[in-house]
Length: 470
Image 1 (tube, rainbow, N blue to C red):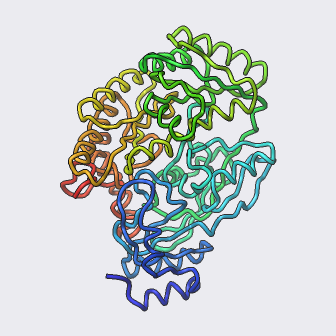
Image 2: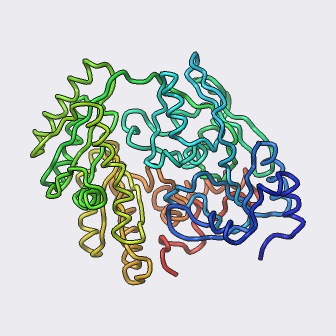
Image 3: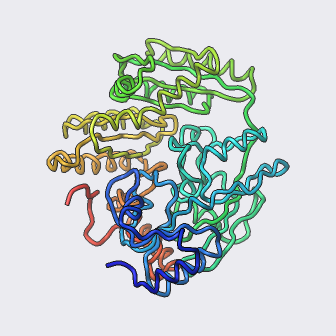
């Protein structure tokens, strides 16, 4: 259908001609993310200030044009997909690190800065920003805030929401509001900062953030534990945590992910292992030495056939490089990757691993399991070919069973990827009708015309499953 030429002229007036993309090939670049599905926007706009965004939102709200904010496009749940067409607001040119305040341990950033750049700048100041999604080199802070991203450090340090103390936000009506502030303690009224973080761009557009930093840990050590039974690795995780060790990272890779990495980029991983655990501890050097020794001992108690300790920083980096390679490695097996992140209580990890094994066998699918097992945040990935309709139908059924298993075990649909377009059908299963209705009422209050990132989070009438086929 396209936008009225007068609307396009107005967008060019607010920004400039160079920052408004209209050609088909340019728009297609912003029609997909790292999840599933392609939706073509009518126009892509690159704002450079909150004032520009406020004007764009006033125009969009008046004309009832859908607006989808977008960062690096790395979402695994469909968060930045312009399902209803309209305007994509590409936030990548608002990418400044405004200031690091060492006295107050905070950073002031624009949303387009990448996670890795913020981490590097914090480290130069002797500080540490813990949230570390695997896409950190390309994912933006704005996208991390929208999805409440996590990563391996989530076990010890928490996820993105634990580091956000203030925001500047443009509402769907084009008002600029500020939430929170510069203090860690702030209980003045409703916690709008926490409401915005994780709302997937459905309530407002983040234009600045005040982020909490912490002192950089002085020492760290890592190990790899190799298991012949995947359930033993799950029991070892519980054993480590029950014995008072809180690792900075505790990750698991199953045999399929191990083999995929070795085929993709040989890293010396044991091809015959059923699973490996990668563990890292950090803190005071004496405590680190004691905890890594104790963790190795516990892994052996839970049937680890071998434990390899990284001798130095280079070996530590090599261990984590293998984990980072899992996603690109499994993508080489088949062209379509469905990435889930159902999360269960830590005590239920062995049971969830068994349920995933049963689902893999029932539907005869290439299901790979890896992820942040220390906090129960597993990543079951199904590798398929979307040209094979029969296979994709089985994928749909398997995904539904994965979500059901997680909720039945006391877990959640998503630990860090968000809901987006992939999981709305299952929201009521976790929240119940009243809980979901309360969320709808919040959305209606903030965005009565439903223009901001529509068709996300909330199921459409009659929607009962993830839709991967027509």
